[in-house]
Picture 1: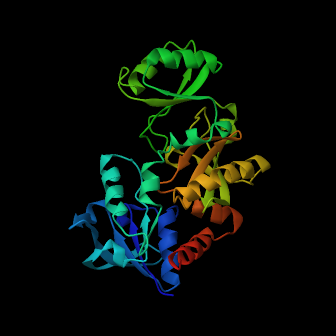
Picture 2: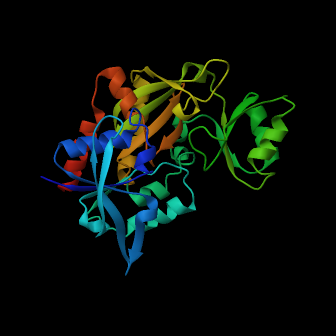
Length: 316
């Protein structure tokens, strides 16, 4: 069955083809004979309560000149069989508006992966709170006194994160007794004006942060993101983390089993979770990455499983 697939993503000319997950998803779809189209957030619009996009057919290959765009066409987003929401964070107001546009698509005609309603409800930091037994001790607040209280309760070491951050940006380690701790808390909360997530510091982060890819609530593969030497605690690839082979432990599988029903209910088909020391620290539902790293380390081809699922989903 030949499908029309549209990928909403960052500018294709800026991606790293050695790491980008969207790139291999499009390549796999193309290899199967599906029509692949490309558009950015700015190309989405609404007319007469119907979602449209200015989309270009895209042809992909390896090498320096890895893509070629055809003529753009104005198309109703419901004329595609599948629309992949693969725009990277920041999850800002523009991103939210885009999910509202995509929510106008009739799900009986077109499958949006991931469901835009689910994306809106699943802030990477806050969505973890639906699974309290699997996360480290946490608070969400803008109150600096409350953060200092939690710092003591958590054993004197916490990590604080902005709710709209991504790629490890704006994440701070705070230690009780550090003369800069109040400055950090004032800065990240904008002097008590912005909510942040604070989590108990997990010492096992020195061993790495495990990214687990889930497809329709089931684990597909994992990669360990190892922080740079020299005391860096952030493991994200954007922050200089390096990939290492990783196996799924029994606890990892139990975490996935606990998350699966909620992810399926929210239409969050393709998800990446971050696990440190057996605890979920973030759940990425916008544009999870790690597929190419897992492929290289395990001799796998996860994108084939993902496109298999998309084909099956579109046939329902």
